[in-house]
Amino acid sequence: MSRARVLAIGDTHVGMKRTHNEDSFMLAEEDNLYVVADGMGGHASGEVAAGMAIDTLREFFRATSSDPEATWPYKMDKARGYEENRLITGIKLANLRIYEAAQKDPQMHSMGTTVVGILVVEDGVLIAHVGDSRVYRVRDGKMEQLTADHSLLNDYIKMKRLSEEEIENFPLKNVIVRALGMKSTVKVDTVLDRPEIGDIYVLCSDGLCGPVSNKLIDSANEAGGPDNITVVLTKVMGLS
Image (cartoon, rainbow, N blue to C red):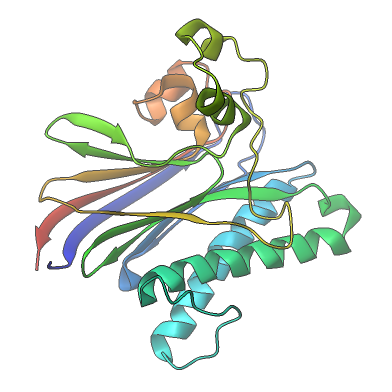
């Protein structure tokens, strides 16, 4: 399959309730890498964690682009391809750096971040994520969620058949069970999607998908803007 050619834009907003923005995003067009990180933790440490995630991924991809023989901090999984290993390794390295920084500074002790990214590769669009930031794909006017939240609510949904009302009234909606910085190691979920010309991939923090599910930043703010809101849109312009 040919590699997709994409056009990407991104934006972030503090929302209507927060005083500072703990989200971060990256459009690394030279590496075909697009990422959203949603930080968490007091004393603006969430902002630090999200920034560290983005900076580490950018640094790792630049290093491995300029020197494909560079030593990696983790062994490759032979069951996965080179680019999938590269993306997973970058995220694992970000996790370790955030975790170690949090252990050294008491004010940063609770910091962490979600991360969701897409990497355009030869055989499709590779999606990787940790936490409850999401990727949607818009195709022929229909929006489909391509990631599964690492959240307590989603765990309950998997275990029990919750009704729409039970989901709506779930008391611990904001509790995530996986994030960068929580432990020294992290499991990164990946999926390979096969793009078609005209597809739009929507990467977003839960500040977008939480209050309005399938709408964008203005709508999220109209719905109260309870959290920072970040979205990256990548449109498949062609296959070459």
